[in-house]
Image (tube, rainbow, N blue to C red; front, top):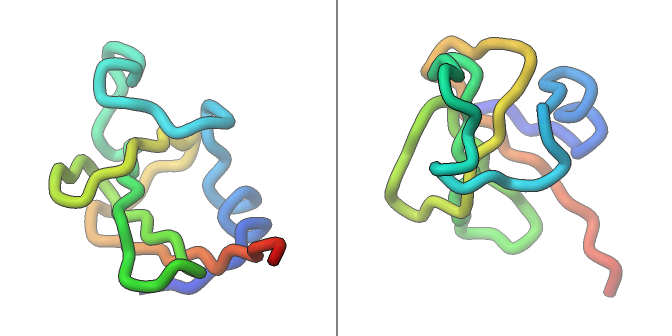
Amino acid sequence: MRLLTEEEWDAEFTTTSENLLQFDEIPEGTKAKYVWTEVEGDDDDVICISAGFHIVNNLGYWVTHQPHDFEMVVEIEIERGD
């Protein structure tokens, strides 16, 4: 598992949209190696993004320009304005 900042995620895995996608919004013909699933995590200050399609605790999908290896999990530290 890799821990990245939001800026590092954006720089390394450029997404094709600015918002999370629902399954039916993923462009037809998109290969699975470009799809990531954002899932609920245990910590409110971390977003968990797992390579590929996942159903359990699914919050939505990201499609990136860079492929993944189907085993990668990325945690992104997020800053909350309190």
